[in-house]
Amino acid sequence: MPVLDYEPLVLSPRREVPRLSPIQEEVRALKKERNAVILAHNYQIEEIQQVADYVGDSLGLSYHAQAAKSDVILFCGVHFMAETAKIVNPGRTVLLPDLNAGCSLSDSCPPDRLAAYKAAHPGLYVVAYINCSAGVKAQSDVICTSGNAIKIVQQVPADREILFVPDQNLGQWVSQRTGRKMRLWPGSCYAHVQFTVQALEKVRAQFPGAPIVAHPECVQAVRDLADEVCSTELMVGFSRSHPSDQIIVVTESGMLHRLRREVPDKTFIAGPTDSCACNDCRYMKMNTIEKVRDALKTLSPAIEVPEPVRSAALIPIQRMLDWSKR
Ligand code: 13P
Ligand code: SF4
Image 1 (cartoon, rainbow, N blue to C red):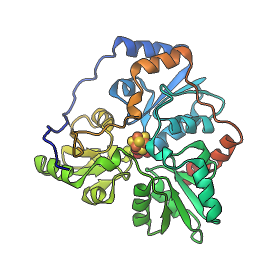
Image 2: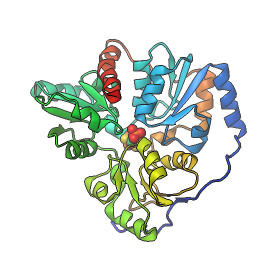
Image 3: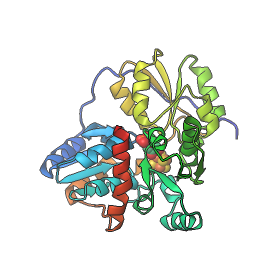
Image 4: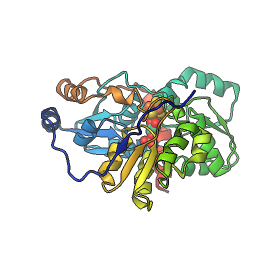
């Protein structure tokens, strides 16, 4: 497919903090009234990130969800993230602004298919990327995120054969970095696989000298082209410490808002695809500021995870949280 003609999406340094809109002020007031905490993923729209108490990656969000003391956790992300919050902190009301906010990776590995695969191949040690359902987590030995996957896999007993689910691209990257052979579940992130070498070479020619930082959910050819491959959280540190004042960011476009806030003196260029100057996750973008307000008003939609799935899923999540601190 030819690279279409479009202008790159460039966010230049921002010097002033924008004022909150009336609806954002309403959210802030409702948050107080409901004794709620708002946790938002790096891919959320800027309006939501601005009213959140914490904005971060899947790992940071899991720790914050577990530590939350408020009555309500309003989770601005996708379903598996809110589900994880409910698993680690079941005493709180956990809300997700749009229940349809799913994830293609999670969909690629239904719990019954994993159960069938495990039954046909007994003895495998299942490492599950956090982008999966509670039903898959409940059948896993340990969970990982993109931020700690290498560290987690390095701690799996050496005599066990690993099945890595559901992201084949992240799994391949971890396998290459750790030297550990693994069976890979054939799932992928529909958004990250849209980044191509040809689109990135074009943008690199427009911004010579700007390093490319890419998420490990990208395909290998894109990862090989990148100067750094890391989780969304680690992109913040990379951008801060790299000598260049322009950075090409190959992940979902919401990440650029977080980067612009935390590294305000640099220019961020969205990684393009063959058809678009930036790349949005349609699930992450289902959450809107109106839905955030309505969730706080109505205390719905709320996430429930039935027992015994919840307590079975907690074991590998807790193992991840513990191993991650080692
Ligand atoms: P991070 O763990 O890097 O935040 O990634 C989550 C995700 O959904 C990436 O597509
Ligand atoms: Fe899932 Fe990809 Fe969206 Fe992340 S960006 S939530 S992996 S579909």
